[in-house]
Length: 125
Figure 1 (tube, rainbow, N blue to C red):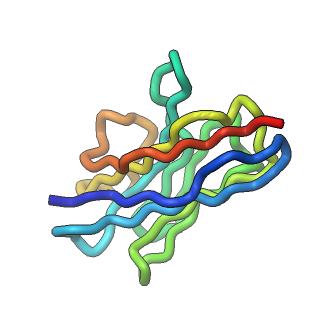
Figure 2 (cartoon, one colour; figure 1 turned 45 degrees about the horizontal axis):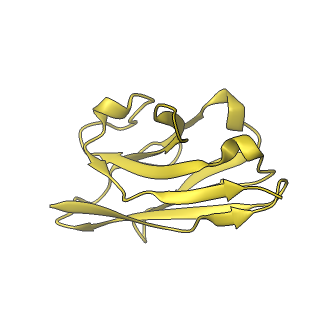
């Protein structure tokens, strides 16, 4: 069984920064295509960013382009989401996701096999 363990998140003022981390644990393969999703109260889960197995390919939802950066450290088997210039509308629970059957996972949540426990990000003054 594979678990995704998340860390980071919290409360930050508008314009501030946060970094989320996610690492697979348990019976893991060497690497996974991974992504971040988020879900705000009363809204559906939304794709945020994805990174390929190698880390060379990335994708973002338009609303975070230029502000968020997804990256991975394959030596540590960990992915990160650096979030800068945060806005109140970024407030949500953030989830990392992984799949082992593709080089790049894409934007569809249903194509991911493993999910983290979620971490709250609140942007408020």
